[in-house]
Length: 577
Image (cartoon, rainbow, N blue to C red; front, side, top):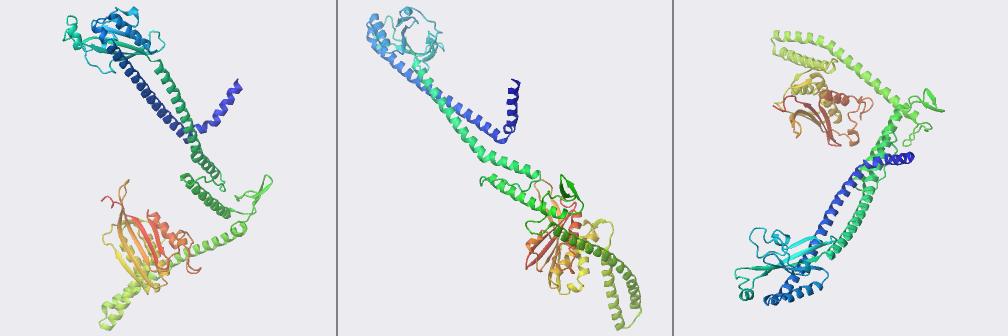
């Protein structure tokens, strides 16, 4: 017994995930709604059929009562009581459904009946036969057929019966012939009460119930079977496949594929999942290329595996797409990384050297500027003053260039201060516009005059703008136009307060950037220039600086038309002003 109970328990545990699934809950919900709908429809249909059948019986009973009344009219006027009794007995025997026919006089006494033992019995005014007419005190003279009918249990208790009363009115012939007994102002002289069996009606209703229940159950089974099949094929099956695929991918099996059963939402989701798994597989393979190493192998279960290698035992060590061995790929990546690191160290050393040279040049420039300024004040000839003015102006220009170079190459902890961004832009432009690469480049400036001050590191932002200007000059090969624009923009939001940003854009008329290179443009060491022209660090440095200022840098480019770099910096405290 315990083993059998344990067996059923194990089956229940195995099916428990299905009971908690969305498909099962949806199946139960629709089944309950359908059961309620079929039940309400069946009950309403049975009630209407029963009412219709009972109404037919009532109409028949009312017709029989009218027949009895008109058949016995002459006998009543002649006061031939035996003929009245014979008539109602004869009519009662014509139908098995008629159980009793009674005639009550105005006092409530049974004067005639198909049950001889009832003749002479009197009923109270509160009885069922009289309650309808005498409910309001004075008796009613005209009552609807539905109000004159009453349904009750038969005396034998085996079925139901319906009783119908019909009034016997005081006609002209009656009160003229019997004015002593029936005064003219007396409207109702008595009533007919006919009781009919509802056994045939009950049998028909029982048959209707059976047919409707069978139809409802059959419809329910058919609909639920179709629903179960639809839920399985269009919901449970694709969902189960997707869940299995997710488990496989989470376990590291990126080669898994989810079958696509249809072109609906689940089909599109399966397509997207397969594309995601394929992308993860390729990225995992690329990481394997980077981490593969053949040195220092160790033995695991009889197989030799590199300590740093994620590749499974028995792997042939060759990329199936490129055809190169992992040793070749690793060697090539190692050489390229080494070269880029060397360039990075050289660039850092060059920056330090430039800073030192600029600092050393600044001292003699100060002396030249001081003495040339003194001579300019003392000389009297116009020709000498003109020469000395040129010396002073060019010396100041050299001093500004050296000062900009020192600020550009300084290596100190970033210090954010309230800065007018337009001043930083103009300083960067002034530093590059006299360089040889900018001699044939026209710089257009459209700087908004009412920009708020930003909390930025002046030197780092100067470095960003310098790099973007130099990149624009390189893209135009020294000939073209650079448009520099600054403006204030406000970003509205329905769920948060609006935020203000200062946007600085650099638009050139250069060669543009191909679409396949846009995503990698800000990657370190990525460059489209030659080996001796660029390091691939300029834009990545700009990207890092802007991100450290909680800003963003974007690029839009069309090959053959030019590029637009946009630096967006938050303007704190301006959005809600």
